[in-house]
Length: 496
Image 1 (cartoon, rainbow, N blue to C red):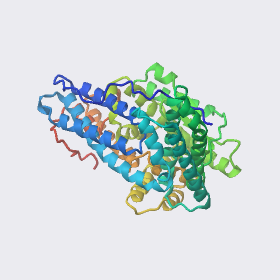
Image 2: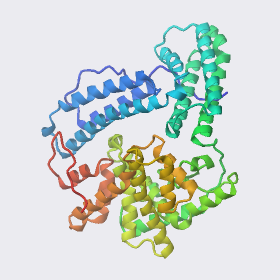
Image 3: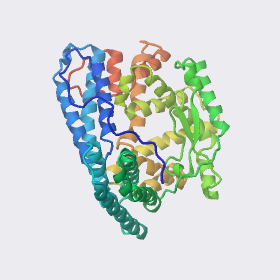
Image 4: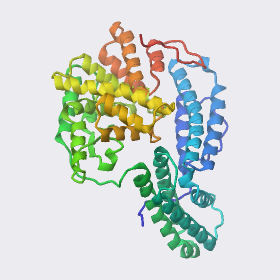
């Protein structure tokens, strides 16, 4: 039995029904409210693949978009105009994302259709506090159990046709259904003795089978084994992080709050996690790829080669300071309401911008260090090529892997991990392009603002962080006080 912490299903947030609009509501407060409303909806309608969840979110986005577009845009100051455009673009993009998610859910049908609708119905009836018959619920759970058993048999035989990336997403959906079903049983357990008597055993059986199903999908279709953790923490990461922090501080490139420099953490990635993320990942914590005792000898050597000191020297400051850790540290403290508008062109483009800036300033002093940084520059370019060609149907996943091996020089295992990570559904089609394009936009903005003598380098970098996340062109509009309209569209020719 999977032990889970479950919450009482009654929503503690305010009703979703809209109250009369306060015409004195500022754009900033509107963004805060929308952020909380969306979190409220997603907490209550918590099954992502449920048609009910999709319908509720669509309705909310359409209503908010209509109200927003009726507001007096021209009466706002520059910051409020920026926030208006950010919110409008977010709502429009969220509607498009829901349409994409519906398409992806249909692709998961071979693994979910036999049992998922029944679990969703049980959970949504419970949310409505609808009357439930224990014997009927037990029979439904028994039917779900049989459906999963049949599905597992077909899965083991290889009789299910589904692409790896849809299967990867389906495994996550199965785990979400498992969690929701655990909440369903917890809601009734104890104060509905008859229902508990009927459903205790079949519920436990389904919970175990859902866990087994998610693991089987990852093992048999996606090619991932269960996590195996090894408590190894290389001192190298700390040394490289300290080197980068000292460099930006000594050269007065950006403000580094003492708490930000002190409080980042290190975690190790398991062998299976490294099959999806073969290099370092960061934020407030850095997740380190490193050989573990349970790896095959060849995998250990590949992990060591892929994360050697000269490659890692560039990735550590990208992930920590002045990269993602500093970005997220500042984003939670300055205009935090804008975190709703996260974009790879700001978050990833900003980190790659620092790679380019460090290169220009001569940070890599030895030939090995320069090769390490240039490898990552080539890697960023290759990501754009294979990710866009995949999404346009011009390359298969295997061709993407071969491309990284033959053209960039990746180890085959790390190339496979890169492709899995890019196409598992967690990243938008333009995410990989966001690194390079965002960095080039920031470099162009730097030429306009810093190289022209308007402000200093440190002031420029601090300003970027304190405005929080947004498309770089809107950041440029703030810094240069450019005219804006309600239907403002990108027009900046930033390269060339």
